[in-house]
Amino acid sequence: MADKGGKAAQLTVDGKTIELPVYSGTVGPDVIDVGKLTSEGYFTYDPGFVSTASCDSLITYIDGDEGVLLHRGYPIEQLAEHSDYLELCYLLLNGELPVKDEKAKFVDTIKHHTMVHEQLVHFFRGFRRDAHPMAIMCGVTGALSAFYHDSLDINNPDHRRITAHRLIAKMPTLAAMSYKYALGQPFIFPRNDLEYAENFLHMMFATPCDDYKVSPVIAKAMDRIFLLHADHEQNASTSTVRMAGSTGANPFACIAAGIAALWGPAHGGANEAVLNMLAEIGDEKNIDKYVKKAKDKDDPFRIMGFGHRVYKNYDPRAKVMQQTCHEVLNELGAEDDPILRMAQRLEKIALEDDYFVEKKLYPNVDFYSGIILKAIGIPTEMFTVIFATGRTPGWIAQWNEMISGPYKIGRPRQLYVGEARRDYVPLKAR
Image (cartoon, rainbow, N blue to C red; front, top):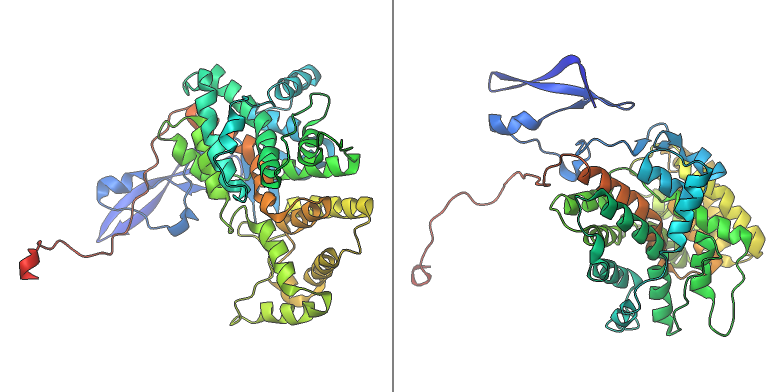
């Protein structure tokens, strides 16, 4: 963050002018530092913090108007085409792409941290079999701090590094365990001979009596889903991780807080909402009727998976996911699935219909990822768990960035609109 050459914004209230410094980042809009307003007796009012920068960061940059997503300066399209998930994890954590030996060492480290403490298995038995997997993930992720308390000193860089590796490595294991627990099937141990996405799929679908051979096309698609969800700047769950971290909470608790925030249908539940919407439509012959309902501003029905709060152009992740989606459908021969046919018809409408084009309601990453996960055979209640697995390196990188430098405990203010001071009236006098 650099001072904008001494440039300042001026705010005049009741005849008094307050000068506020203006800063500029590497790219993106300038920001006005409103920190001194408190000493002048004022706060800013910004519901949802949509116009407020809560931190400065070196990790991720988004330009929603232009459809740009950069991780450490690298466009997401290039990373999705040429890189892989674990290399992106390394980039998010360390700031630079690894050389060959660095990547090999990092991958090996992650592979050898995938198992979880055996006593953690007993923790699962406290949940009902029909518990939502995200409820389980919130609980078991927070509980990791009780098993790995040898690396909880947040002021120790080595502890932070070890914890980052453990979280990235163990999250797929915990995710697969939450799925197996609901089915009543035995947990499948991770295998060090498999790549990250392959290992996750094997733990999900193998059984002790029937091995699961992972298709390279499906493994690549899962790796891309993880990669495309790895970080997305200061969204609700990432801001929650930073807010929790600002109290000095341990990283496992902070990531559990992020998982809880991600669980909301307006955030991580969006791809699950896509499948629920398709189920509501029910049949391809009903699509025109539901599209008409979506265009009616007085009708509460909305087409899920189109448009994005940040991107006012085509979500760059969706372009990559669209290609991956068609690769998966071709691999599985799933083009005849009625739900997937509905999804493809909606995609065509969104890209050609004037209403959607004018309002820039392009298919987003949640639309395509939901279709892919459905085709692979993953139940909708696991969609957000997979999102959380992919987002873990972003959360931990953002947490680590905050902890590594000076920071303040998060403490938003409010515009109070309740009763003014009034005196207590004894019960007998009321």
